[in-house]
Image (tube, rainbow, N blue to C red; front, side, top):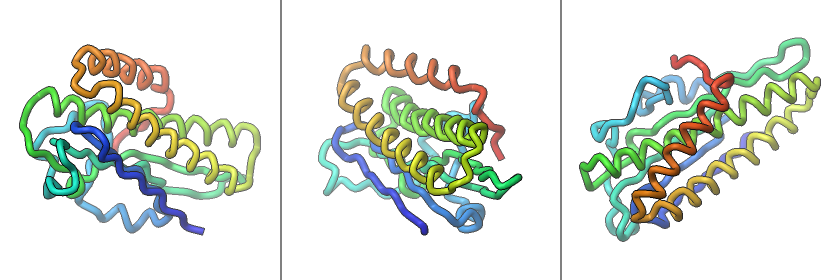
Length: 189
């Protein structure tokens, strides 16, 4: 029943994101190689612990790997209650630069992951309100939104590629989306 979704974007020189679906919460809880998305924490270059792949990623100067992860699931009154969180993966994220502009770009990839994590939470809440008990419906919604997250990351990279003005526009756009979905923000562990 477990399904893994992996999409690694290595198209543009600034960044890429991985989003995965795992069905075993205990496997990830013990992993010290992650940073949970928190409103009060911004990525630092020291968080990027991966080994740069300069052979297969021509022109890429940094990679951000993040996961949208189901961290808990249970049934309450027959309805699935599914907890979803977003994480930055240190050992799969790397950089060959140390500039502020690129770090802000990478942070926005992580923020996009959180936007879609909140959209998943909102969708799950809606399914609960409508009394949907079939876990397959939740799984399909999850898969659909993870795919959209990956597409959104590609669009982000394609639009901001060497364009500081577009980078600023995207930053404002993602900040606005996070604010619009604030009701679906949860406290960090």
